[in-house]
Image (cartoon, rainbow, N blue to C red; front, side):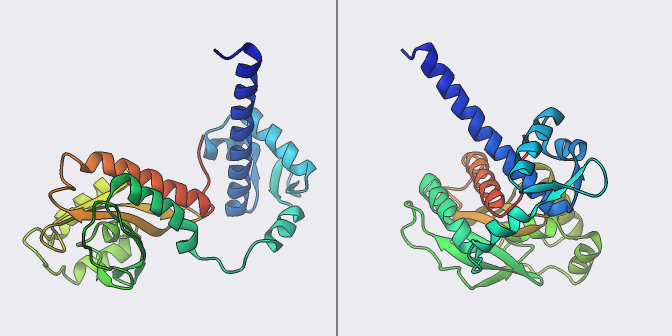
Length: 265
């Protein structure tokens, strides 16, 4: 049974990690906004203003933030430039995301892909094979339609209205009996994607294939990529999909944080 000192030490370690996590989120908010006040930062991160003020004071003392000319607002300091100089210039989202995708593939036992979009199609840029997969298609480099794939629906759900209207106006190709080709029904699905934070497909692009995807966001909150889990429809179904979707959402959120997107709380 731990003694009181061990309990205090453990609690202190947890608080220290949380403070570091929040300090990094503050830096990410300032990187995205250019300058922001304590109240604005606290609201965006869902953290108390006194906590934000204390962390800003520490970051300012280390030269990582500085007071903006406008009273009460902060911006990134020159210390950030020195830190950035030590970072590699060979930024690659695939390298950043791969450890997370590997853990996800191991956890769910299915194929995991990192997907980006190009025009009105999506392209897989990396793939990890899960333990349950006997044979699988190598999707890397392949282009697939936005409206019939889970990753594509993630991108469609976050397009500006005018761009989405243009995509739907061109007509939607049917690939299987399950492909959603009616614009109104697809709009309803995209609204659901935005509400719950992930997209699913069930035999919409290929018979026997199901998938779930969640968005990977950049510093400014824009959807930069999607993480997908795909597998046979008899394994990814109404019974198993909710639990798998939760894991996909968590993985995408972790990659987003690695990619600079601020963490709330």
